[in-house]
Image (cartoon, rainbow over all chains, first blue to last red; front, side, top):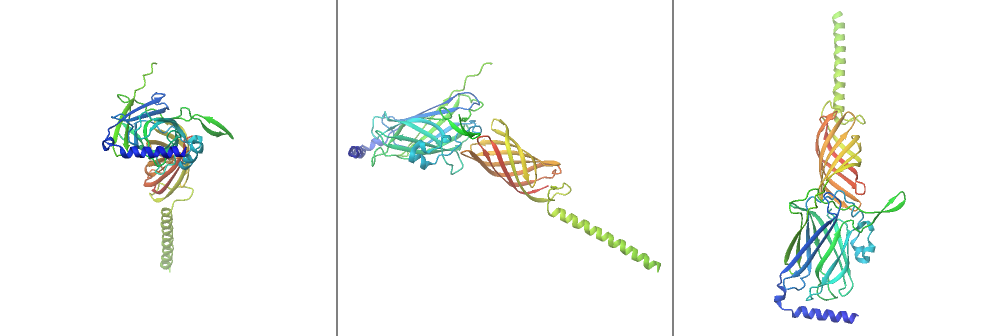
Length: 260
Length: 167
């Protein structure tokens, strides 16, 4: 197995070095989508968001190094009970989600990663976890963890900080994405697609009530009380290893008016 | 002889007046030097003293981005305390604080950074005293430290206010 890995790494490195210079001057394309579940004004919700990255040539994009996701103004964080516990990054990296308290879970998802010069279709990392991390600057911190075993052996662990924003956007999730080798010593993997949630959907928290451990569902961040014209705006800016940037935007449609 | 006796009586009366006046001055000086313990500051004359209070509050209601809290403050000034805590952004809060000690009330406004982390969110900023009523009608102060915690599970608030104020 180790010989196979070493051979793969060698081949990938060779391909990387033989690639024409023009191959690196590609145009990255990004698409973004977002949704609220439920999508009801003022109601606690689960935010689902995802993005897909590609190049105009149809190949895998360069490795992603940062992502700023801008979230609509008016999202209400005062009522949420998400992230009542903190997960330490070292524990997350060492033992995965098992190293984190259940009350630190914020959401989950999947990802597709691609080795350089791959087909662009990607290889699925079936499980991404989002947990609440320690806050060195006093802001909410989301830790993402993805455990890829085959064909890309990669533990992706990176953190995003929730910062205030202005105008149409109330906050932004500023995330630095570390570079991860596709195989030991090989080139870095490209993230092609990520789908994840932040919210109480499928999460169970626990609390002590009169000495007993009781399960409960955390409350999510609330949808704004008013919907702006055209829907709730989301936007994302992606930065790649080669310092190139691309952006994408989407809206969550306004919920239908309730008939009384 | 009669004139001498009259003179002695006048001197005694004068010395009593001087003594009484001296005692009055001493009392005034003492009362303005430090707040009376337990009785709280009097509204007779404005004076400055150190304020150090802790309030423990529980949530009574929520409206949009505002937590309405009620509880009891203890320390230099004791009494019922009400706070309207407005979460302005993911890391900033403002607050209106009303304290109702015996014989009056004090209203202050605070501006603080807000740091949610796990089960507790902390806030840290400054507060100014805008107005008062009754015995505290001259309550004023600015740059008071305003710190505390919010227990995220039930929104219970503990707040500490420290600094110099006049009343």
